[in-house]
Length: 615
Ligand code: ADP
Ligand code: MG
Image (cartoon, rainbow, N blue to C red; front, side, top):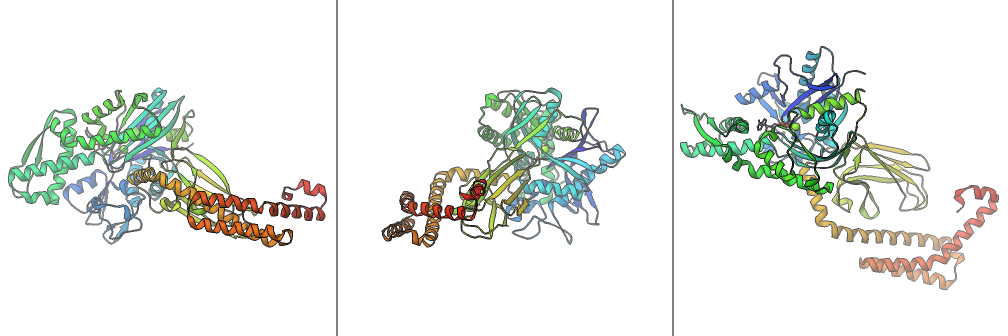
């Protein structure tokens, strides 16, 4: 089996790693010796593209167009970008459609930008190993939806890589630890990076990793601390030097952010530090003293947000904090002492940090790559679906096939039928979300399946949902009769941010009661309409089988049901439906007898018994 490498494509930094003799190691850049590649791409004024540290330097000098943290925009649409994004990124002027950046006269997408980072990692590996490297495993946040995962795959493809597997970052981190110790128990993976936070609850047992729940925020990270400290520094400098105009000077702000990050990093190991700012037209640099205590006051509210997400994740996993045996720390921001304290206090255990928090995800990706290459065989990975998936059925309701937090990979098959006579195609509308009605959920895909025209309720259509190990959904519908089949791989053009996932969940809780009432009503209406349709048909077919008073009874039950339908009162509709059902019972029996007799006449008894169509 050829070599497969593991890649952590981070918001802030990316790494590439491989397993050598059973031990995962990060591959360093042979030229600089660096392990981390800043996920930054710069387009210089003279038409060059710089990646990594060189791009970060360009950002520092304010030259060219520089794009960092592009992972935030992977697989999302223009309608999902916010004010901050518009300030931070050179976005093309559009309100909808996929995100595009304006770079000179080109329009580039987030996967195209990420591909530059991946290509640079590949170059490093190929130089270091002296052979071509095409096959990789790439990690993605556990909450990435189909479209964000697809965008990551696209980035790999654009970089000339074959992406054999996307693996969730917390799963990778637990793999990196699991290899060393084979822990049993329940684990929380706390990943606090530069731009994002996420927490996952995993169960480890006999070398099997199972993700019970995930939660997080794509806009919560070390960058927020940098911005907060930069704001504090600018304000202090502006006040003390009497220069309010620096508050809006972009160059000074960029400098302040860089200074803030450095000060933040120093405060991880030192109790106090000095932040410096060179102000335009002032000879001596401005200096401000910042203690760790003051720093903690500035960042506390933001840092505490992580604990809110931990609480949510535990709630979804139905686990109490005391039940967590170990906490794995991932991401540069978990080095901050306050963050560790908050984690320790909440979970009541000393968090694990033996493996470098910058490397642990990449190392785990390498372990996963090694498993695929056949090096490690005794591990299985399980992850979960973040939002329920289903299809729209009669009355506009959403019928769930795969429930939220179901482990993946998974398959579900359900049988559906046609609501009316002689339809020639049925509409399959694939939905994602927790609300009862299709209209309140997110539409992922829609397609038509041609079916053989049959009486209502006779067609059998199988709908299969399959989520592969990468979390990508494919939906297949099959008409049992004709074996007509149609499959879509769901690659929604725009994804959801995790805030939207959260909003959708909150929304579903808020509306649960009303939704259920409405859904029950909708189902009653569907049942009533269906029986009305069948009755009309039966009255025509069986006109000769009825006494006039029987016919009158049916017609008046029909009228009563039509009237009940106007009332929108569920119970009234249910009662009237039951009454019509009872009134048509003799007719239905006689129609069935006649059908069976006709069949018996045209075929031998054996034929009839052998055929399941007879009944
Ligand atoms: P991502 O997963 O988003 O790529 P990383 O895990 O590489 O991010 O974390 C980067 C973040 O960690 C940055 O905000 C950086 O400032 C912060 N960081 C790195 N080292 C330290 C440190 N020693 N103390 C505090 N923060 C740190
Ligand atoms: Mg990370």
